[in-house]
Image (tube, rainbow, N blue to C red; front, side, top):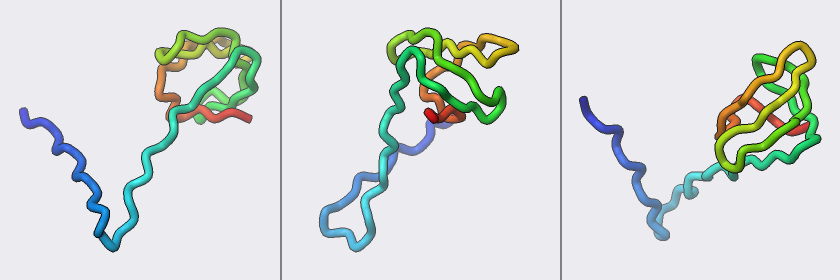
Length: 73
């Protein structure tokens, strides 16, 4: 099995823009959020850098970091 290639570094003299690294998302208890699969919810617990416990009304789900499908409202 092969490892994925390491990202290439950006040269300052390059005519192309540097790749944008997404900022890590931070949620706090009480934040209203929306999730692509589960819908609207409210953050009821945080495990720093690991997961967020979210109440979606019908179910409570533990959403793991990096929260790709969850956004703050």
